[in-house]
Image (cartoon, rainbow, N blue to C red; front, top):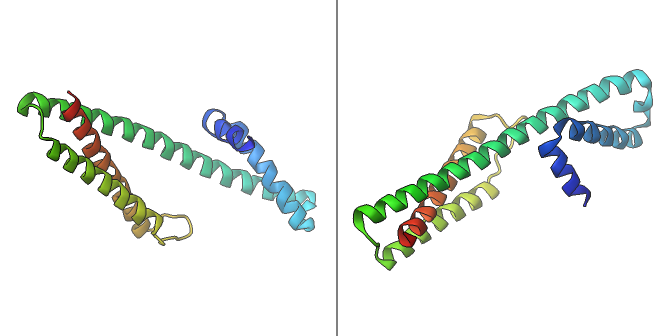
Length: 157
């Protein structure tokens, strides 16, 4: 239940989320390293932790918002394209619909498995290979979603 509360704070109350997570990390570090309880060290360390949590929170929120927007746009474009294809060419053959659906699912599955299996990790996650990996993953995911929605919209119209 605590995880859901943290997720809701992360999305709807980021400053509260940052404060809570900062305190949790400081408390955990203080137990692991009692020397960190010294006031001057703890003030500096708390500021560092808070800045790190703020950066991660902002990065997550940007990524989450971008993901939601990209998904909505992809679904809209796929539905519009599928509807346009119906009005231009009529009802598609079932085998074509199945092929497009299977292709969309295969692209999404391939992108997901490639991302899960990707071992490209650097400090900061800003290297060119990591950025390209992310771009390819998102591109394939968008293409697969587009194909799947297109096939549903074309067949359903």
